Amino acid sequence: MRPMRGGGFGGFGGGTGLETTAAKLAVALVAGSLLFALTSGGGGRMLLLAPLEVVYGLRLWQPFTYAFIETSPLGVIFGALITWSIGGALEMSLGSRRLFVLAVGCTVGAGLLTVLLALVWPVLLGGAFAGGTVMTSILWVSYGLYIGRGPTNFWGIGLTGNMFAALGLGFILLSAAFGSFLSVLPDLLGLALAFLYVRGASPRTLWLRFNHKRLQRRLSARPKHLRVVNRNKPDRDQYLN
Image (cartoon, rainbow, N blue to C red):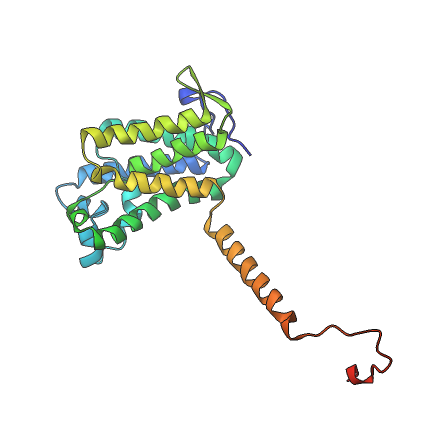
């Protein structure tokens, strides 16, 4: 199913109430960002993803909490609008559960991969990442990928879904050009996971494929000890019992 295209922010559809998962994620993003801003001088930094603290300080909640943190006012405003609008459009086609797995699951997965990479790439250990942009970028690019060659628009500019997805990737690469590649590494990892999820590589699908191949191997191995009975032989008593 393709996401519905209609009105709303930037020309996207979405629910108008707070009962949708997309709206709840948007509220969580605003609440988490405000909590970080009000406590950034104290415990607020513990909400960010700091691989050094996760590995050596055992702050295992950070790959989850960083997903709802934006560090600038514009980031909070546009992040909430994108999550509510584009997330709402995806939710109308994918359902609440799949939207949650896509938005939160891929963001958390990107955080965990960042921590794992830090073990072999020590320069990452000194970083601290906010994941609000990771989640909104995942929603943006996934929306475009689901539409594919179909039409959508970006504030009145006609685009295909694939062009819309490329635009989202371009924003991240532009941030890397003005900052550093390391600063957008979780974003790139999140987009890679989202691409796999959109193409059907969800954990459930991978598990089903694994079980299917395992069952095929077991079934193909069973007949090896069997022999074909020659029906032309007159005496077939040897095959009884």
